[in-house]
Image (cartoon, rainbow, N blue to C red; front, side):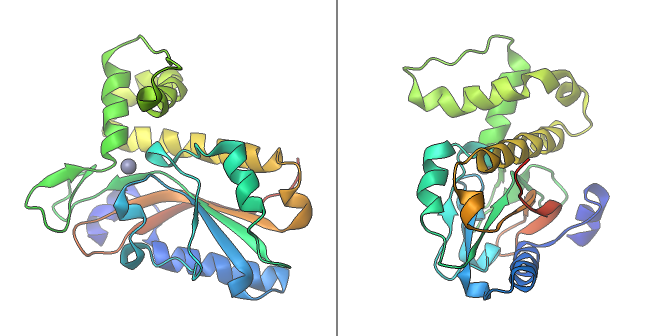
Length: 233
Ligand SMILES: [Zn+2]
């Protein structure tokens, strides 16, 4: 597995190790207990990103889920406002965010073998469909009456300026995943920086990267792209 991942990621560790290191670092920097740090995630809804044994996040009280399709923080300002009421007294908040991509043992990118299945499935399957849509047509519009297509159309619109780079990439789904990461990081930083009270009350950190799903019971990995305290700009 490592041999395959080394070809595509300069740096990665298990999701669990990266997340625990982040919480230890925040507790040290802020002089607080680890258990007073609440974790919010913005990951895709795929069960692989929420399976305790594969993720093993330092969140004994559970995680607040910000993410919709592909990990984009579709809960928006309303969700963030609700979350801001949940931070333990004197504690801190950590947002762990990013899209996900599968790497099978046999080296297929964007596919994995799930427990209980004999075939390989697309991962992120939803983002793969968004990418197919993006590459197949130039018509993109959001119909406010169609809630079911809102998230995919929205993401396709966000990716539209990068469509040629995706089309010409060696591995299009890897390129698309990287571009979605950029969108997620930009959006979550803007959401938090523009939030009226969260940063005034608590230290807030972001740990961003790409979640790498692997076959069956292997752990998820995380290729970290940012870890920072969010400050007013
Ligand atoms: Zn997904």
